[in-house]
Length: 380
Figure 1 (cartoon, helix red, strand yellow):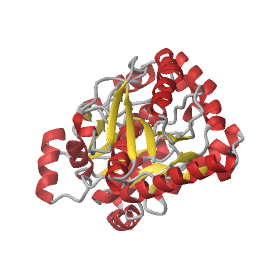
Figure 2 (cartoon, one colour):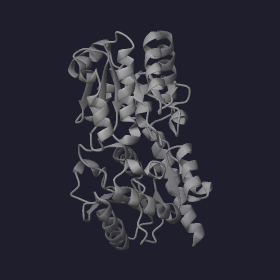
Figure 3 (tube, one colour):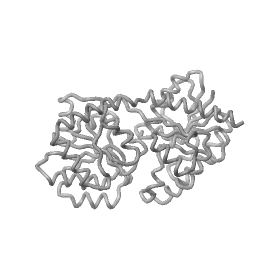
Figure 4 (cartoon, one colour):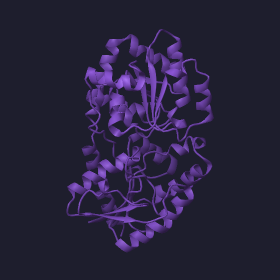
């Protein structure tokens, strides 16, 4: 079988959520399916680390697709040209984008459709593109993979897609995330917060990650008692807003807020593993990988009671109302003042984390790819 793959998010030292999904699954699939041929389509020169075997043929085609106008050119002109030349049996797109101008059987991985619910969180042309094209992609897709039952239902409800067309392919968690020794934690805390305990958030500092309320909750937490804790935000400020800036500037305890925007994968795992707790209180998520990463480290999680997060966390976290900084702050205090509760959450978290692995994700994705080809064959 010949499989073409959109690999534009495989960027050396710049892997983020969907990039990691692409890396972890494609590495396993290509090394397991040695008799199949894979065409990796990049929008810029590729790094050899992403050519996982002799059965992978890299292809570069421009323009670099980092803006809605360039997305259009790449997916509607460049991609069809590559697909026509190589004649694959299947086009896999881990970031959900497709080419309307191609008739090749296709499987997009639509991780979430947050832009349908919070369009104002995105720049004008981004939200216009997403809301125009993703309904078309959902209808164009031979099959769809997504990362949670919540996202599956959301796609069905928003786009009218038959639920039987959608496969749930849960995310995995890297082996980098593991419990640390007391000495390792002390070293990491000295590095980031001068030895103080801290709460951690990992991810892009985006409006739907609820950063402004997270800062306000931390301020209320600090103001309610003699706590030595800091707040570590590990992520880039690409989507930093005036509301976030204003909230930060008005904080009495803003000096206890630490920003780290250039940590390696290993450093992120160490930062998570050394935290008092993970604060992952987004207003919307299709999955929420840091929830599982924290559990695997033995770090308790406070997360939101909306969208996919209760599904992913199960009974192994403290849930809060993400629209209430008081709710977030109260759960922070509970973890500090109720050590038995924290231990229970940690124990449940270890068990819950075992339900997720990139090997399981890869198996589910391959099954979805086979289902896609079967669907395409039946429609002929």
